Image (cartoon, rainbow, N blue to C red; front, side, top):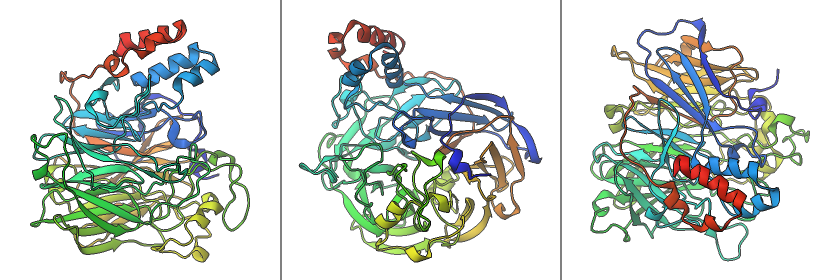
Length: 552
C-alpha cells in the first residue's frame, strides 16, 4: 500500500460522525475540544495550499467528529461569481485579488475561535456552529493594504498570539513587493498589530524590521512582542509554487519590539526594534512568557531545507533514481532534504545578543517539523517544561532532485547530500524536555502513515495529561491518544469511523469548553468592499448584492 501522503490531495469531504474506539480504552477524564484545519482539495491551481479551509472539530467527551468547509464572504463571492459569470469576465474581476482562504490554523482568544490563513486577516468563527462571524479589523484599520475591488489584501501572520497579562492579541501587517524590477527578490514593511477583542486594531510601524520573506508566527513575553522571518522564499516571477529559482535564506531573523514602546501616544508611528539572528531557517516558534531579567528564551522548530513554497510537477524526478513522481504528489510539496532541529535560544531583548543556544535533534528520525503542541494553561505558557513535537518524516519517493540541488550547499546542513536517506524515515511524535533539550519519550508511527500537529489535553484529575494527534493512513484517518509523558508505550486509544479520511491538514488546537455568546464585535464587509462594484455588470452586481445581504 502506498504512502498516506500520496493520497493526501484526494478530494476532501465533510463529515458528521461518531467515532468508534478501535484499539485501547478511551481515558476517563479526556474532555474538551480539538480542532484541526487544512486546505480542501482539489485546488484550482494544482498547489496544495491553495484550497479553501476545511475545519474539523472533535468533542473528546462524546467522540463526535464534524468536518465542515470554511466559508467566508470572500469565498461566497468567489463561488457565486464563478457560477454566474463567463470565464473571461470572471478572470477580469478577480485578477490580482487573493481571496481569504482561511486554511492554516485555529487559535483562541479566551473561548473565541479565530481562524487564519497565509497573508490574510484573522477571521472569527463560531466554535459551536463553525460559521463565519467577522473579519478582525476592517480594511481601513490596517496601514498596508493591497487594493482590489473585491478582495482587498491585508497581509498578516498566520499565527497570532494571545498576551497573558494585557488581555489582547498580537499579530502584524506586512506587504512584500517586488524589489524594483526583480522577478526573484521581494521586500516590504512591517507593522505591529494589537487587538483587544472589541475595538479597532492598533498599529505601530517597525522600520528597523527588514522583511524579505515574511512573518508566519508571532510570540510574546512579559516585555516583548516578537516576530521571526519565516523560511519561505517568495518570488514574484513564480506562480503557485512553480518555477522557483532561490532557496530560503539559511538563517532566522528575530525582531523584538518592547511593549514599553507600544503606547497609545505612539500609535500609528514608528517604534524601535531589537534584531537577533540564529542559524537555520524556521517556520514555528514560541517563547517562555516569563523572562530572566532582559533575557528572552525562545524555541524554534527549524525547517532546514524543507521548502514549502515549491509545488511538485510532472517535470520533477525522484532524487537518486531519476524516476517520475507518484501521480498523487502533483501539487504537493517536496520532502525535506535535511533533518530538522529544534533550537532553544536565550536572547538579550535589549541588544539582540544570543547568550546561549542548544539544539535538539536525532538526524535519523527528526525530519519535517510540524506545529508543536504545548500546555496552554498559564503556568505552561509562562515557563513550559515539555513540548510535543510532531514530524512528517521523509518519504524518499518525495525527495525532488531539483530541491535537493537547490539546498545542496546549505551552510548549516546536518546530513550531507550523499548521505540522504535511502529508505523511509517514519512520521513520529516526540516529547522534548525543554529544561535539558533532551527526549523525554517518543513514538514512531507505522511506515506509510503520517501524523499532523498534536495537541496537549490536560487531565482534570491532575495527572500528566494526554497528547492527541490525527494520523493518516492511505485509506483512513484516525484520532490517536497517548499518555503525554509515556509516548513510547504507544497510543492508549485509537478511534475512527467508517469511511473517515481527511485530506492534508496543517495545524490543530485545544479548547476546554464551548459556549455560545455574542461578543458584540463585528466589522462591515460592505465597508471593506466600498462602492466600486456597483459599476460591474448586472450579473456580477446580483451576486455581490446577495453576498452582502448575508454578510454585509
